[in-house]
Length: 156
Image (cartoon, rainbow, N blue to C red; front, side, top):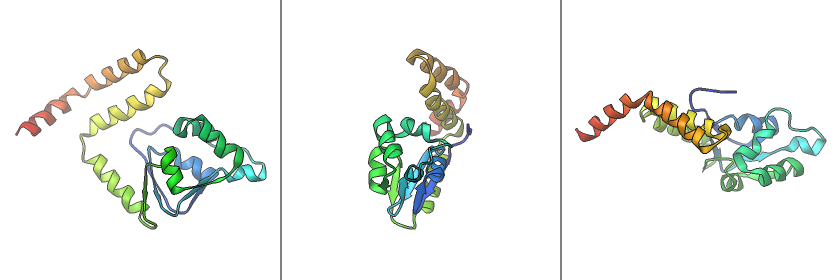
């Protein structure tokens, strides 16, 4: 699923099987300290069918295989250390923190944020570094006017 704007997931409690896979669609995952992650469907012989193959892109091959093949539960702190979540907050505060994050992102120059996000995702599938840099450059040139406005605002 390709979204144009950033998507932020707030995780309270369990994000397992399809719920975990849905959270991986997000650019950011904010988890409460009570959050638990896992591929529990493995425990009953059901393979990941809705996004599990993307785990390595988020957490690396070894960690993805560990979660997928063992079906074990991962707590919020371990999820943070493996890159499965971006922030851990106290129980009951994930949505509040996700909204704060959204407001922070929205406070920055919008066109550049969209270009930066698109360039990062493009780099995952670019055949070479040169291809990724060429894409980044061509996208950046298209919104350079916003940079000039930002520089003038900073100087004043």
